[in-house]
Picture (cartoon, rainbow, N blue to C red):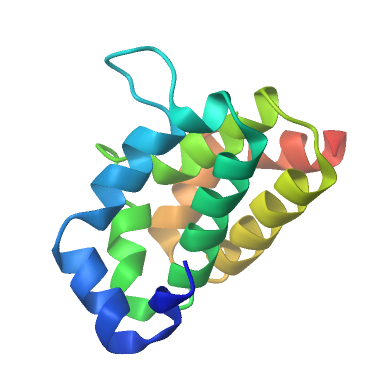
Length: 120
């Protein structure tokens, strides 16, 4: 997670398919669950990694990828945990992505992000 603060390493992570791995950790559609649905610390670390990577412009296309469904899966983690640090890191990720692009806005609108924030 800390290595992604370096632009070169973040780019290598993005190019090597790291977001696919994070997507499966969040929620693996084939199994119906993911590592992040079983352990709040793993959920926190994965979403913190996404939050750090959301500061890089070149990673935003991964957040907009409907096949990866990163935003949807990150918000879905809130259905499993209400630990303060997990909620806080999801909100930090959403805060970064709200300023990102129209694609991210569309996804957040589709999943009803405003209602989720109101509930929180």
